[in-house]
Length: 278
Ligand SMILES: Nc1ncnc2c1ncn2[C@@H]1O[C@H](COP(=O)(O)OP(=O)(O)O)[C@@H](O)[C@H]1O
Ligand SMILES: [Mg+2]
Image (tube, rainbow, N blue to C red; front, side, top):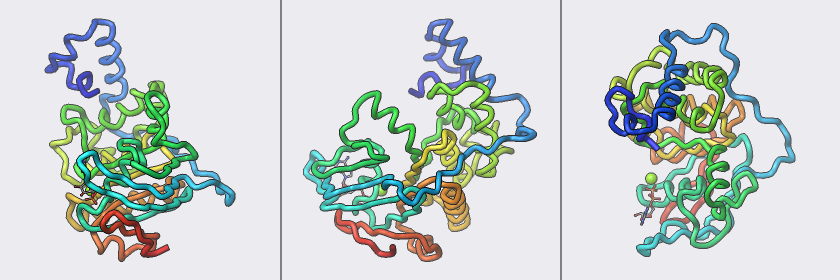
């Protein structure tokens, strides 16, 4: 996936692409990275509000989920969990307890050994190929180590998601700037990841995760590599996204972050999930 993303000037893989494909890629990226870095004069809001319907179905539902990795490692046992649209849920627990496994099951990166998982009413663990890919478009994911494309600018890293999903140039432009603004990075649009602090890189990765307005955002230890100030800033952005309707599930082993908020908390210990605060 990343091979076509390197800078056209220094990438041998890109130069090996057929002329027509290369031209199209370069053309698109020129457009999503305008020469001026100033924000659009009147960007339209990027994230639509979720409908406030009390009868909505859970957005995430796990029933008796068990995950045993092929090497025999038992990561989750008897996990039952319901997350409603608009919830903000903290998942805590010590290292190795199964937090990442839980999120991986939710975005279909891993499959449960037993039990059922529904995401937006879809049995994500049964989906394959195109259907899984379509489903994943509805789930934003943020990782502890950002996973940005080093040779692409901030704007390109974020815009790529939209481009890959076939959004029009106009729509890419319409969404890109308000999203960068939302994470406070409109002034860094032309920077490369290695020109940013850890906190800024994490904010790029959040922008990338939500630029296509997914109803569900999963963040796996998003503050794990950040100092206290940057951690707070990241949590503040996640809360802001939640306040405009995105369901957020965030794992952390930072007790302080959990204590200073009043959101529901579950804890995973030895693969078992416990409700600490509803
Ligand atoms: N791909 C894997 N293969 C085998 N075992 C794994 C794999 N990923 C995680 N595990 C094991 O599953 C358990 C839970 O891991 P993980 O979900 O990463 O925990 P956490 O995110 O809470 O630190 C650990 O014992 C870990 O070693
Ligand atoms: Mg983890």
